[in-house]
Every structure is written in structure tokens, then in C-alpha cells.
Image (cartoon, rainbow, N blue to C red):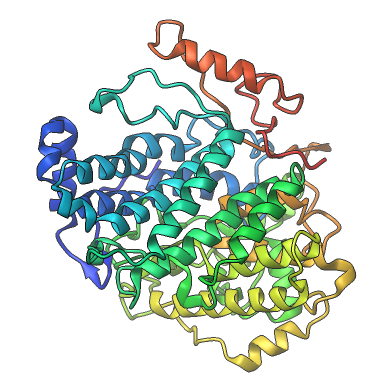
Amino acid sequence: MKLYKYLLVLSVPLVLGVSCKKSLYVKANEDPSTLTSVDPGNQFLYAASSMPNSFEAYYDYYRAIMPWLQYSTGSSGNSLNFTNISGNFNYRYGNYYDNVGLALADIPHLISNMTTAQQAARQYEAAIASIYMAYYTFYTSDINGSIPYSQAFEGRYGGTLTPVYDTQQSIFDTLDTQIKNAVAVLESSPSTAQALYGGNDPFFGTASNQALEWAKAGNALRLKIAIRQINLNPSVVTTIAQSVLADANQMSSISDSWSLYVGNAFAVQGGNFDPTGFLASAPIVNFMNTTSDPREGIFYRQNGAGLYVGSPTDPDTCLSAANQALYVAKDTPFSPVQHRLFTPDYNENDGFGAGSGTGYYPVLTYAEYCFIRAYLGAKAITSDDPGTWYNAGVTASIQYYSQQAVAAGVSGYTAATSSQIATYLAQPGVTFVTANAAEQIACQAYLEFFKQPSEGWAWWKMTGYPNTTSIIAWEPLTSQGTVNTLNRRAALTVFSTSDANYANQAAAYTQMETNPLFGSSPSDAEGRVWWDVLQ
């Protein structure tokens, strides 16, 4: 395990003094009475800066989801048991209850303790916090199913210390209404001038109209949550999509992307965000080599011969004597994952020293929004033309990755040009074909989620793509001839009977077990949550 205590420096532009503001948060948690003197912006900044969790990056992404989804392999390829879920997984759950959700839950209470005039000026801030809370609640429930929400975070305000677990269906319904209401507030024109988080908002703090950027993000988030139900309740998806698309405030360019922008010292070489030791995957490299994908040099680095070569992903192939010799060779032919996309300060030993670029963590990009619109159109949920939105999504993905690669200082990389994008869109397998709409949209969304592998995992469960026969062809994953089965949710922890909230958790698990797809037990990660029904 890599342990590294890093100095947090956010970029909005670079916000200094975060550690001081974090100390206010810690003080507030130790003594709730101090919350009356804490500005809501401090809690919002804490929640934002806590979203990228270094242990989640290392254990959940690099060591689990990315190899499962064939984005990468370990330094020796994939082992026989690489799909087994470890105890070091599902860091989003603890991060929600210990950091992100806890801080965001303080904000409405802080505002309620203000004067009437001050409360009237904080409507926008409350709405923005509500949208961010909705996102991280959805993100946590997405692989855990039923979780405490309606009664969570209220213990220190006179509420229960043993909250009930809300079903995933009720959470999704609640969040849709919550976001819709928050967007309506942000689109309103209150008579009282509204305060905004400004520099305490590392997502949209530099936007010319912070409130409307959050309204656009909220609308996109409603679609993101709704589309999870496309195989389960398409009529619900249709209703939500019609409601969202009736609103004029929609994402329209990569500048609308909802991402956390961080400084050079946030994710550093040697820390848990550092992807050293992880290799490019053959399925993606093969596709990118064939199609001249402009993102290849952003995702991966060239090998010593100046080529992009992916590691096999099938364990049996990785463990062959010939490949094992290649993995340990001094001049291994396999390309590493691009260090500076994840750790911009990385020293590539090219004579120029440590990198000085900045980084980012996507929440919901414009490219993802386009792919959602394309997929909804392809499934006849909306009247959107899937080809138009597909092309927009591919273009936006390349443009945004290119922009962030330049900002991160990826060595030898120059910004993608419009002609490169046009050439890519004309390649076989990339050019949109209506008959293959769902597959092409899902495969390009899969590439878009390279920096956001948990969403790639979700789309694979939702669409069935990529697979071994799709445009981006995965390798069959076999261990000593036996096909590996990929996990579909978190392995859920079971409280001891002495835990104060044992009864509520047991009731929730009993309800979840009525789903025939839930699995053999709460700890069975091959089981499924409520929305995951694609066979």
C-alpha cells in the first residue's frame, strides 16, 4: 500500500489556505456549537476537496475497476484471481458519511441559524449544495443499493443516531425531485441579491454565471441518474428526460463540464493517485492504433521504442512464459498508463524535472452529457438524433482530454486539432452507423470514462458494452481455462448484532434480498443492485 500525506492545493484559480479551512471543519465536528461561526463556503470547499479520495483511486480504480474493465493491467499483467474483490474496496461509502456528505449536510443548518435577511441571500448556495449532495448520494448508492439518506447526518442536530436505510429506488426518486427543485431556485430571480461560494467552489467558481452553470449541471445530473433505469423503468426515464429537456439551461460545450480542478500539489508522484506500475491494455491500444485516436497519448505513454503496445488482459495469456519474460524485461515493450494525466508533478526522467501542470477530476463532463443524449435517442426515449449527439460526444471527449492534457503538462503532447478529430470520426468503427448506434455510443462513452472508471463500470452494466465481440473487443478473461465473472456491486459489510444500527441494516438487506439478482449474500459482489437488470 502506498501512503502519502499530501498538501491540498486547489485551482480556482489556485485556492490557498485549504488546510486552514479544513481545520474549521474538524473543529465544527468536534463541537457542533461552533457551526454557528463557520461560513457555508468552508464546508462546501471541504466537501469538494474531499471528493477525490486517494485510497479510492489506488484500491478501487487502479487495482480493481480499471483492470476489470480492461482499461489497464498491473505491472505483470492480470493475475488468476484479479477479479476477486478485496476488503480494500468501496471507499466512496466511508468518504460519503465521514467527509463529503457530512460537510454538505451542515450547510442547510448553518443557513437556518442565520438572520432572516442572511437566509434570503443564501438560497443559491443552499441549492448548489443540494445538487452536489444529490450527486454524491447517487454515487454512493450506485454500487451499494439501499443506504441511509433521509435520516442520515442528523444525529448532531437532534435527529436519530440510528437512521433507516432508504431503498435505492426511493433514493433515486428523492434525488430527482431534490435536483429539480434546486435547479428551479438557481433559475429564479430572488429580490435579495444572492451570495455564491466563489473561490470556495472549485467546480464552477470561476464561471461568469456560477448559478446557471450549476443549473446546467443539475439538469445533466437528472439525466445521469435517470438513465440507470433505462432497462428497468423506461417510462420513468422518458418522463424525467422530457422534464429536463424542456428546460433551456443545458450543457452546450466542454466549458460546461462539471469537474474538480486541482493544483500541481494535489496528486503527487509517489502518492496513492500515482498510477506507476500500471500498464496500457491491449484491447484499447489496439483500437486506438487502428483508428488513430488522438487520446492515445493522453491515456498511455509510449514504450522505449516510441510505440504504443498494450498488455494482454486475459490472465492465462498474461501468465504465459513468453509474456512473463516481457513483463520483467529491462526494456519491456508494454506502454505504461500516462502518469501526468493522474499526477501532473510526475518526473518523467527526460531531463526536464518534475511536471508543473494542473489536474482535474471529472464528475459529469459535456462529453458524457452528449453520450447520454445519444443513448436516449438510440433507445427511442427521446427524439434526439443519436448520430448528432454521438459525434458531439466524441468531439467533446477529445477536446476536453486534450485541454486537460495540455494543462497537466503531458510530455510531447500537443493539442488535438479539428482535422485530427474529423479524421478520427471518419475511421471504420468510429463513423456512426445507425444499425450499431447503441454499441458505438457505449464504446465511445467507455473511452470517455478512462479518467472516471467507476462510470465506465456502470455503463458496461447498463449497456453490455464493451464485450468480446464489440467494436472495442475485450479479451475473454480466463484463469486456468475458467472464465472470470466480473463484479457488479460492492461487497456489503454486515454489522454485528451489537451494533446500534444492526436492526435497520438487517431490514434493508432483507428487502434487497427479495431481488432475485441480489446475489447469494450481501458480500456477493457478483450480485446486483436494484437498477442493474440487463441480462
